[in-house]
Image (cartoon, rainbow over all chains, first blue to last red; front, side, top):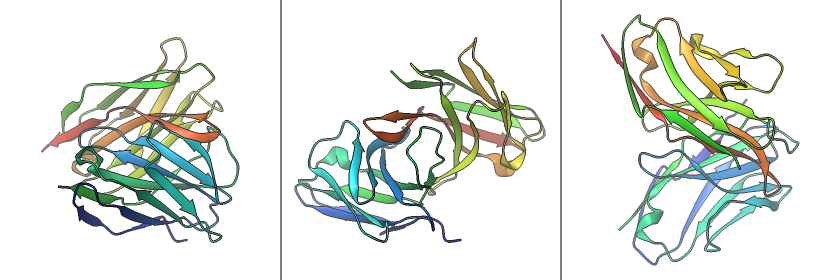
Amino acid sequence: ETGVTQSPTHLIKTRGQQVTLRCSSQSGHNTVSWYQQALGQGPQFIFQYYREEENGRGNFPPRFSGLQFPNYSSELNVNALELDDSALYLCASSSPGVSGSREQYFGPGTRLTVT
Amino acid sequence: AQSVTQLGSHVSVSEGALVLLRCNYSSSVPPYLFWYVQYPNQGLQLLLKYTSAATLVKGINGFEAEFKKSETSFHLTKPSAHMSDAAEYFCAVGVLWTGANNLFFGTGTRLTVIP
């Protein structure tokens, strides 16, 4: 069984640029969530994709957007990067069904540094 | 509203000693509660979860947690600490929020194990 994978591992961007992060979900999982983990903080929910549509969003501005593809992989796009966007971005997948009890399985994350 | 409070951002224990990491939650609905562990430069790994089946939940690596509704607590324990337990631990409450199954995380507790 293949776990959640993310690419790239590390990324350095300049303020104002745009970035795309990628995630492949665990086998059999059709739901993907993205989280932002700032240094010294717990992860914060950005949004979730289910059946290729966004079905929930946290308190993040519209310049954070995403996609989910038919094979359930996902992208997180961030436009007009700001210094505060520097963080570890985590992707998590879960099995079919929308419930607060669903276990989410996390990838290793992408470390984004904005200079 | 959902939230998690982890008491103690840093906990140090001697190898072989009891590990106790504290978590208190606030939830407007019956909660689903999780403990995750994060090793340096890695994603989050699920240790255990509570979904109302039993108040004492056993997880991986010898960890367990007890749900106490009257105290709104879900503390994580391990009878005997091992050097490999040194990591960051996150408590989370799982809810349906904005249409998605979402995890609200605490700010984490860094566990140091002293040889």
